[in-house]
Length: 87
Image 1 (cartoon, rainbow, N blue to C red):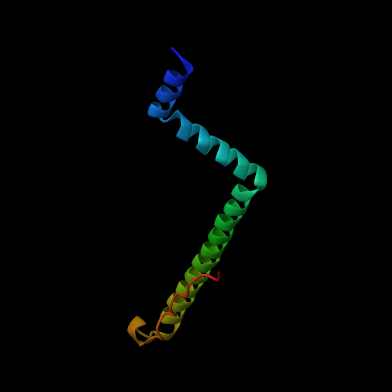
Image 2 (image 1 turned 180 degrees about the vertical axis):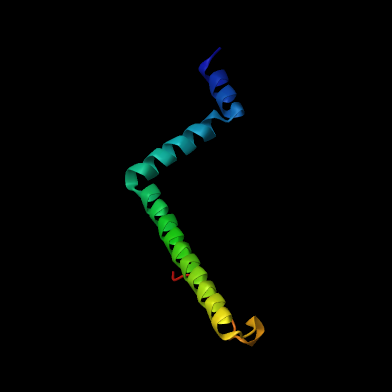
């Protein structure tokens, strides 16, 4: 098998694309892009965790208010709307 035949076989199997993706990922890791992307996901998770805790606390407050005053849930102020997370 000659070198030309081997090159055709490698490109036909897609090994070139796999190697290119592997090299690109290694270069991204070396440049720190993967850490920055991971940090963005961690920030998003932190925001979601805080929003969830706030929503749970508000629900507990409204439930206690309902028990103490005897008001119906329909008579209570509306729930606050959800805003988009800060960019």
